[in-house]
Length: 106
Image 1 (cartoon, rainbow, N blue to C red):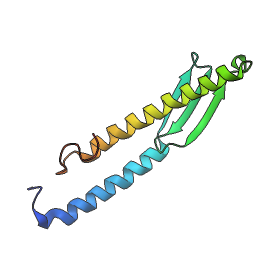
Image 2: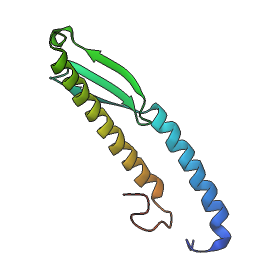
Image 3: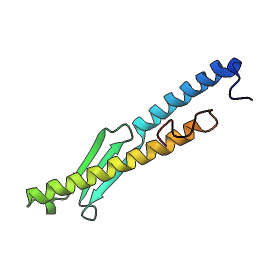
Image 4: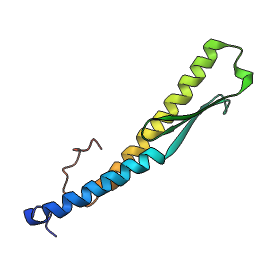
């Protein structure tokens, strides 16, 4: 199939939309986890960037400033993993489509 054949454009766009919808559903249900202090602080987020879980071990609650740093570190790790997973999924989505390199930010 010639990717630049305009007669196939409608079918190609329909398939692309279907893949985008599936990717969105997957992002909403795929969870990644970040942790700090050897798992004493754990943050879980979806790849749609919704926080679904926070666990804080009572042993780290004595120092509020340290706890803030640990929560921030765990959250940043979880968000980085969510971005990496989303980027990888976008690469899968773009396979087989006539998209110029770099257009999707990959």
